[in-house]
Structure formats: structure tokens, C-alpha cells
Image 1 (cartoon, one colour):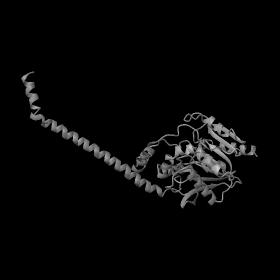
Image 2: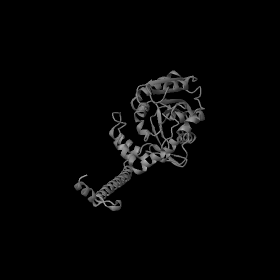
Image 3: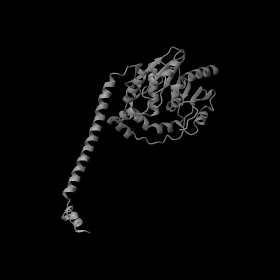
Image 4: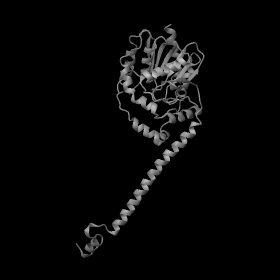
Length: 334
């Protein structure tokens, strides 16, 4: 090694392994950069949190009430009633439908010229209160029935979407003299696979409280794009979705999903109860989707499975077809 290189190396090091002035300079720069990054992250998190709080407060006053409140277990449950038909249809939403009466608007409008439609928003949904009572099928079914009793509705067809197939099979067995038929809209089946999932409810709660749930919602795709909803309705659904997203009531219901499915496995629809299922023709998420529903109607005196092209939310695009085929089915079995 040349003498010049040795002298240069010596100038860049010190005794006892202590950093040189040049190394100290770079260390200070690195610490400053890290400090700036930490501050930026903290400011970003605080901004997301504050914006969410302000936006949530602002949106509270912009949500337009609909339907009517019914006292159930000391709390308010929201129910929308539309139509003057002689026969009544009680409509139940699937899990996590933030604003049921608005989400099911196309179907309600198709049904209401022929039926009295009663859209029940269970606790934690739409404009209904939340509750600390466990979201077992038993409690949910009891609360829905109490709401209908308060409204003096004691004879009706029960129509349910998605997980309402689980609550519905329990309901018709508990109140067989009240339910005249069950109508499933891509409704869940107790024996379907994949329901033993452990949901990260703690993470969902954190997303809600921190405001990052709103941020993710903002940059997500619009589930109502291209569907028959006016801008005002879509805006109301958006605000109610943000209000009800990952709330304690529905998170508790999420925790009970598997146990509620297991509890329903011992139940069957009554043999004399008319059953009609409108289901996805190409459900790739659940194995044997069509056979599972065919199994449910095999012992029924009046059972039918109808497949439709569309998403899990068939009522978004197939409301007219659902209404027409339901009317035809009910006429045929008279």
C-alpha cells in the first residue's frame, strides 16, 4: 500500500474504534431523516384520525331518516314498510349490508305494487341502534319477531338474502304458524363449507377507530357503479356504510358466524312450507352451491331452485325477475 493511501486511511479513523467526524456527520444526517419520517408518519396518522372524526360528525346531520322506529328490547329498530298488497313479505338483509332499506330499494320497488313489503333493519344495520346482546341466531330471530309483533304483523312470507338463510331456517321453525313461505336470495346453507374462518375482528375495530377504514373505503371500488340507484341514494348508502362499518354489534355477529352455522345444521325447513331459492348460477366461492340448495328442498312439498346470472347480490340486478318468478311460484302452489 502506498504511503499516501495509508495516511488517508489513518485520517479517516481514530483510536479505540471511535467514529470520525465524517462518520458523525453522516450519523446526524441519518437520524434527522429518520426523525422527519417518524414525524411525517405521526402527522399522517393524526390527520386520518381527525379527518375521520370530523367527517363522521358532519355526516350524522346529512343522513336522511326513512322508515319508522320500533321499540325492541328497549332499543330502536328501524323498519321500512312499503306497498299495500294483501300479502306481506318480510325482507331480511345479508351480513354487513349497511343500509338494508336503501340497498334493497330496486327489489322493494318491484315487490311493492303486489305486496306489503316490510324491510327489517336488525340491530347494527341501517338506522337501527346497536346492542351489547350477543349476536346469536336465537337473539337475532327473537328481536326480529318482537319488531313484527309490535307492528301487528303476524302472517307473512319471509324473504332473506345471504346469511338470512341461517336465521331464516331457525325463524320458520320457531314461528311456523306465522310464516307462509320462505324465499332465499342467494341464501346461506347451514352445511356449506368454509365458514369456520377466524375473523380478525380486533384489526377491523382498529381500522374503524383510527379512521383508516374510511381511507380504504374512499379508495375502494364503488359497489353500486352502473346499478339502478340515483346519486342521492348512493350518497346515503355511502354515509351509512361508513357509520356502520366495523361497529361492535356487527363485529360481534361476525364472531358468531361459525357457531350460528353449526347450530343451524340440525334444522330443516318444514315439509309443508313453500320454498323457493333464487341463487347464483356460477358461484365459485362455495363448492356445490346449487346441490346444497337442491338438498334443502328435496323433502318439501312445494320447493324450487332457480339459478340466475349475477353476483351474490342478485337483488341489485335481478329484482324484476325475482318478483315475477315469486308471483308465478305462489300462484302455482295455490
